[in-house]
Length: 109
Image 1 (cartoon, rainbow, N blue to C red):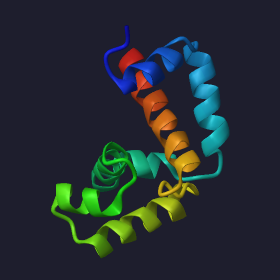
Image 2: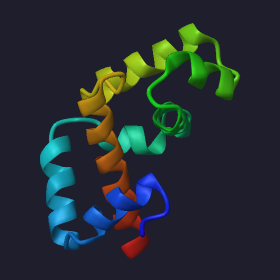
Image 3: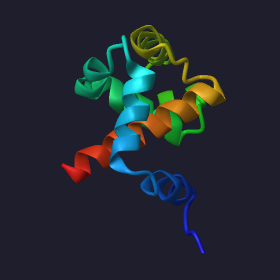
């Protein structure tokens, strides 16, 4: 039995061959600034916190001790950078999958 929710996504993605993972990541992020996002620790921490707090701005701002407007500014910056508004479920899910693909790719190197 699967113990936590993230294991489901991990199991689905881990079944993909590395070449397919790279293809999906490259296909989605062609022409965007993925590398810039992946190098920006501040934005990555914001994304992870926002996803962990169920896309809830108030919960995330309290948990990270960040002003609500600062959080909203960072979410807007992420949207401008990669074209995903992670305040919306489908974009948040896409971001989660892409971050997981990148994480798994980094582990395999």
